[in-house]
Image (cartoon, rainbow, N blue to C red):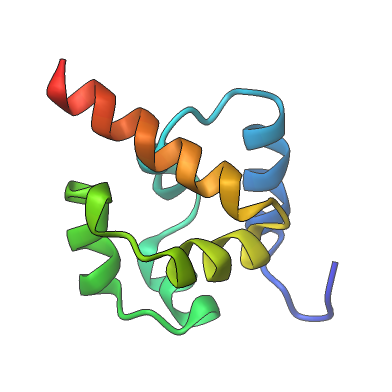
Length: 89
């Protein structure tokens, strides 16, 4: 873990890998949007809009989130897709 990095980022990575976090909402149950936004350089209101409508997430933003949490961009995209499917059901 990088010096000064919030330990909740590692906790989120562990929970994603364990299958305990199944969509983007699960991330923000562990760590606030403000903290994530500051770490990745995305304003919290932008993150909130994309939480409500994950189809708006850009690939570049998936890469930034993935890097922050230590997962692959595909993992972030899978969480977004999972949330989109739940919303449409």
